[in-house]
Amino acid sequence: MTYYGAKELADAFRTVRRNTIQIAEDIPDDRYGYRVTPESRSVAEELAHLASGTWWHQEVHGTQKKAFITFEDFGALMGRTTEIEQGLTSKPQIVDALRRRGDEFARFLESLSPDQLAERVGFPPPIQPATKSRFEMLLAAKEHEMHHRAKLMVAERLLGIVPHLTRQRQERQAAQPAR
Image (cartoon, rainbow, N blue to C red; front, side, top):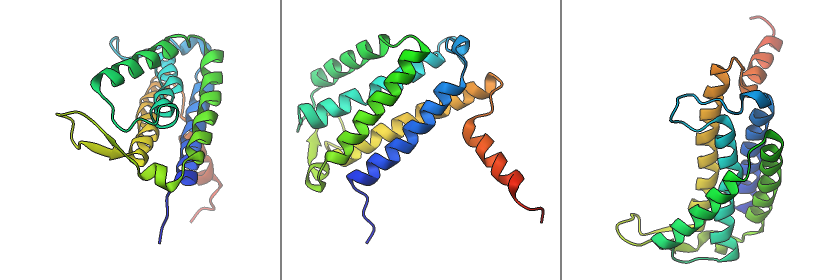
């Protein structure tokens, strides 16, 4: 039987966050204001969004242990997340927050028991499904980060930066003997 629980989720999140931090470090400070399109987030805004994005998950599933999330709850949680995000404006602040908050979130994930991960959280109509497990909701934090990181990798390409994962793959391929 295959088991994917708190430890595996924390380890997977650490890998995702480590890759996000590498992108944050690879993009020069003077390019943090870059926007792929005028209406999109800047590099700094994307990274600050990721650095603040795990806060509400810890609040819902840890501090408050909510069993039901209303639209008002969600609005308040997103409002506080936006405040945190807007306080991160420089590259050093953002990279530090990515590290610190990522470590905090991974430790939080590791602390959860199988029973806690299986707990159901409800939502008001018309949201469907009407409930989700905490595990599914916490997995979404990792998926959310991967979505935004993909956008950052496109920005890297447009800035003339080869993303680190591509560089690593190219190095591995170059080290392979010719066939």
